[in-house]
Image (cartoon, rainbow, N blue to C red; front, side):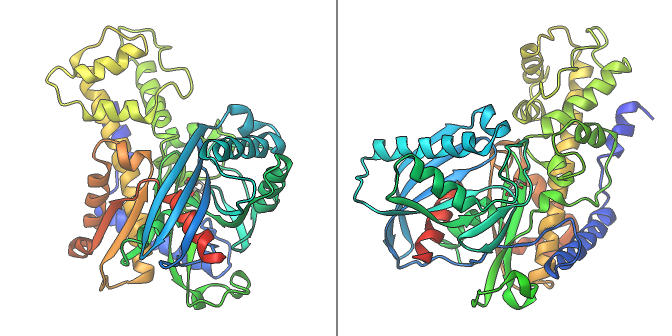
Length: 438
Ligand code: GLC
């Protein structure tokens, strides 16, 4: 068997494997919910709704994997919202590595600039929902402690601390006494809430961006008692932190990738699926083939040695190229200084991109099928799944690949599941939750 076929096999899921993995995923969900040891933390969000009749102006802060965004949103009642201001800054590297004051100082500074640009007066008191897209142990809607960093962050003195306190202190230090955070929300939860504001069938929220995670609505009675204290609503959204699922078969490329991340041993699913890592898995496969002289042999074998030198969007560009001589593939290679390539090698490169992204989409389909298996095993109802993030939005045919995986697992029942792009929902959702709290 050719080397490339052997590699392809290691990324492949048969229908039986997809179904078996779905059952394992569901078991881990149940363990996590019951408070037992599980890679799925199943974190309580202490919310399940937004109030469609609330009026007023609210802010949203959104710390994702790459950007920090500040939004001002007006709630107009009857399920209508209007974004009146939005300001985004990419997160400087030092904020991800140094101590908490650098990160929280940067966020508070950005809020200050946004407030100035938007013309918000000192005497206007504004509440904010804070989308903080990391695993946080929530004790209430306004109290949550960072469990661990993910997505390359290592900022010191934040783990174990209440994120709302850190943010409100930083805001005060910048003289922003009129603005305070009253709700802490994961980006999946924000996305689900924002979509459910428009579509009542929304039962799951997913992020497929720099990182990957999902949440869904659970009956409160199914949640371990210590994780629902002081909460009296019938349903609660659970932040699964599915990026940490660790039962899928991993191959040598997954292992090589993991070893060189700041969080080895963690976030195995995320490292197979999300935008931060897809390009790197691809590079590691190419590096192997180049070293063996199996591909691009007329080039220096060192060409793919630089870590993270290929982005997920480049992999997508390679996969989407349908031109006869694969000029799109050549163009990506040119940006890496590789000018001499054979068509056969370019075809191989396209094939590799295809099986890496197929596996990623299959993992997402497994996760979705497990959640559906938990909330509606017979799939009696229609389900809308709100999804946001660059991989879902921009990676070539990613939504179709997820649909294919769902069909392989759920057969006809997959027709009841609608996937929708819920763009920038996470911040808006946080503002809606903030409004529901006051
Ligand atoms: C990482 C974070 C998680 C977040 C996801 C998507 O997996 O741990 O909280 O939802 O990235 O941004």
